[in-house]
Image 1 (spheres, rainbow, N blue to C red):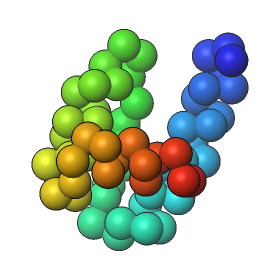
Image 2 (cartoon, rainbow, N blue to C red):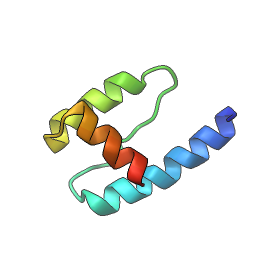
Image 3 (cartoon, rainbow, N blue to C red):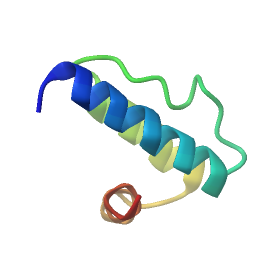
Image 4 (cartoon, helix red, strand yellow):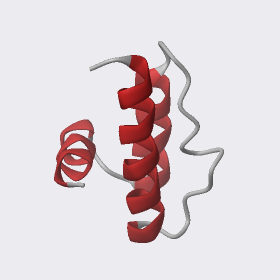
Length: 61
C-alpha cells in the first residue's frame, strides 16, 4: 500500500470513528507519518479503551 492509499484509507476510517464516537475531533484524529503510536495512545485515553480494543475497533471499520 502506498502513502496515498494509506491516507485515503485513514480518511475513511477517521470519518467512521467520528460517527461512532461523536466526542472525537479532527485534531484527535490527526495523522502524522511515523507518529501512529502517539495518536493511538491519545485515542486510548480519550475513549477509555485498551490497545487491543482500539485495534479491534479500527479493524472493524
